[in-house]
Length: 114
Length: 117
Image (tube, rainbow over all chains, first blue to last red; front, side, top):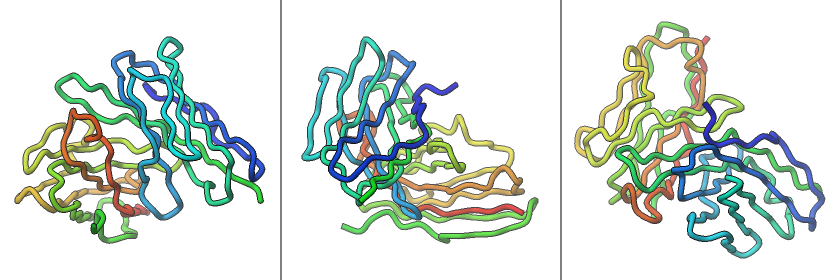
């Protein structure tokens, strides 16, 4: 049962353009969402997060949008750079509950073409 | 600040053999996690420790997997006997705590890639 879904396995964009990575979730108890970035042969690294009380969070070139009613979030990278080429994981967790744990999606492989 | 250290980075074994992975978290991080990442999938939590106590091991195949964090610092994950489907990257991560804003910002190690033949 995939509670966090990243339905597009890959995305290719031109350098300088916008990259939009989508994520959907099914568990309405999730109220904190994170994006992790992973390069080959390295562990995932935290990129940006958003809580359910917000609909947007921005950090430099990275912006995450949250649509709670649609159970959808997206990561925008503007402008995209070749160094952004990596696998991006969407993750979510509920703040309440006995065993609050992070649930990851399958990841999206982003390729930024020079 | 030193990151999360894991060893070995790579291990190849035959099915039914045993293997152990070691993890040293970031100093001061009370919570330690072991994740399994199978190719093409997202990381799946195997076990979570808070200091040296187990918080969640609901997805750990306890008939073959075991993990310990005896002194509340470093941890070992063992698989015995290994099966072909255990081929994956085993990621260790740590965080300051649980259930708090920012506490689920995990810092991951580079992982230990296991191949079972």
